[in-house]
Image 1 (cartoon, rainbow, N blue to C red):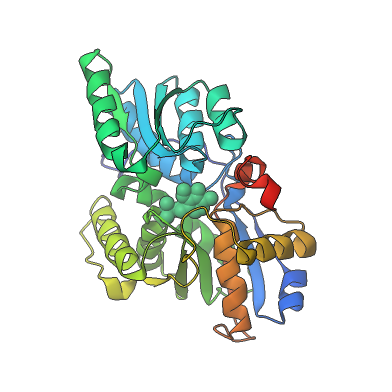
Image 2: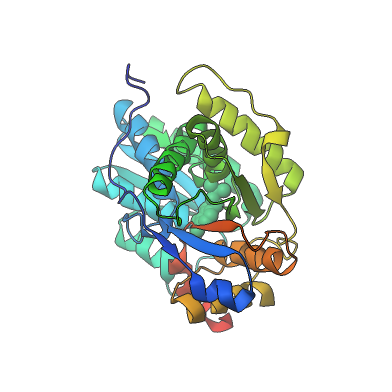
Length: 330
Ligand SMILES: Cc1ncc(COP(=O)(O)O)c(C=O)c1O
């Protein structure tokens, strides 16, 4: 921390654009729709982790770290952006990646290798925490100064990226980017909770008046409400007096994740097709495809009134479209 608040590096391409999606809205007979393009944050094909990494890498550098260590699935977008941020600041990067190593590297994992990371493979996810801990300790014992970037970048420090994203949004709203009034709803995909927590804190700090609807990718609504409210509370304390958020301050639905993490179903396929064919917009198979499937279903069910405005917050992830695992199913 400095007197001016937490350290922050500036490498994201901000503000990200807001675009209207009139053809998608017409096709669904739905509310007015906008998309916020955080798939275009600039760091090695972008995505939501870049905003978090501005704060996380700043903390790492301030602590004198020379190695970033993080973990995720083989096709993790978070790990790809962490690898790029490490390269950009001259830090080494070790990624603990779960799942079977592909014979041929593709998509995010291919980019990890281009970005020069060391990979520690953990075939079974249940061993991930142990191997991550061992990897960190081994690096320290070898005299390196590692910094642990939390899963999904979702710590209180990482969440700050999305608190300030709401300040950015409110400025854009004031400039007329969403048609002269504030969107009643923000809809986006939520998983490790950092994006959700930041948006929840940012709503309070910067006066966003609408509802923030997180579409769960893989966790239960109850887990998310607890996780997001505690992360948002802890993040608030980094900026000033602590604000105590509770589960009642968090809006989430777990209606769209029954298939499990990364399992591609007809709902994601339809949503990806709708965005692509009506707006020329690309979603990803794991996160934004699922979040958009939730958006489409909620529009059809009449969750949003026709005179309301909904902002879909695009969190990136499109490199996974090219993964061997997903491309044949698209
Ligand atoms: C493309 C994309 N969208 C959404 C998320 C979920 O964000 P969070 O982990 O902050 O909940 C992720 C996380 O990896 C992601 O890669």
